[in-house]
Image 1 (tube, one colour):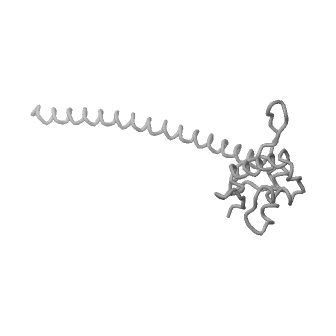
Image 2: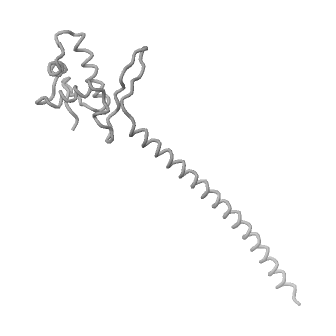
Image 3: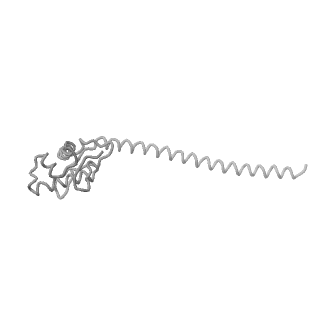
Length: 150
């Protein structure tokens, strides 16, 4: 019997054994990665559920500044309701909405029954208006007047 075909068969068998070993190793890596993805998917689902629950229960919560309780004003997002604002901010928004057009802080104060001739009463209102602008609830025009967002 010719030894040449036997050598080729032995060599081919060695190649196939090596390839089988590589494929088995790759298959094990694929299965491990698939398992990791399944775990990541479950974690993502849980985190998403927790975030949804937190958003649903989010309401203006009192915070502490300098030892005093203050209400936090949330940023306006598509899923943030105006009712999540503290009541005084809701009244400010309503006053700006009811105006015939853009308004100055003084006009908002008049609509809310604030004595606007006293600077110490007007400036806190102006601060609240600016905070509503910063949180995207209102717009401030270049001339200093406030208007609702479109």
